[in-house]
Image (cartoon, rainbow, N blue to C red; front, side, top):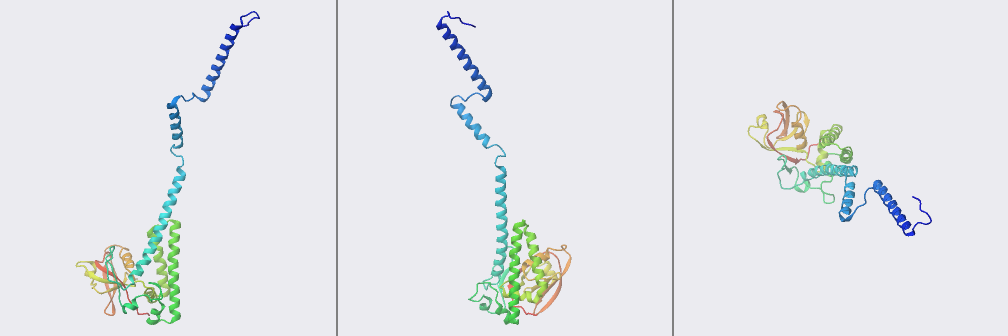
Length: 295
């Protein structure tokens, strides 16, 4: 529309105002189509905040970091349990060597005592920590000082091997059974290297138990049928040396249950060889520390 010079000025102003209003409305419509309608009122503000929270907590956000943290916690706990297992085993060996009142083992019924020598000799010397390796006991038992020192070194190497095995087990996430097998393999190799007599002496000097005794035989058990007696020391089972209850427990669970194997017991200064069914013995066992006859 074209206005002439003679048109009324108020009319022109009204038309210009209408055009401006239309322009502003058109601009608002474009903005609304592009960015969406603006929030209006408190309800709109609350909805916008809820949308922000929902977006921050959508499933999957931060999940890899949480999983990594959980894996690290599980790995730390596993390593701590392995270290604790190794420590408990070492403490158990030390407790077995103490000249203390006898007490029952809640796991396998084994009892602990120390025999051979007086109570003072059964304890570690005053100038050494309890459970320390005592080379004087080896010399008193017939070894030369150099042999006693050499045996002490071999014992320390065994202890270090146990520590490195526990560390490797934690790093590679072994199971407890694999760790037990690996530890037994290193100790078996050491027994083969230095001989059973020297290994027996090493355990004694280190304050560890070195004999498994029979405290009671249950009527009708495999041990009862085989002729095992109270007071016997079980020194071999299925042709394998036995120095601890753990050795005996492992051997009875190998092979086939019910098969007959040999069992050797120290009795009255000699050794008797018996035949027994593999499996639970049916006895009350004791962990003891006995001065060995070094051969």
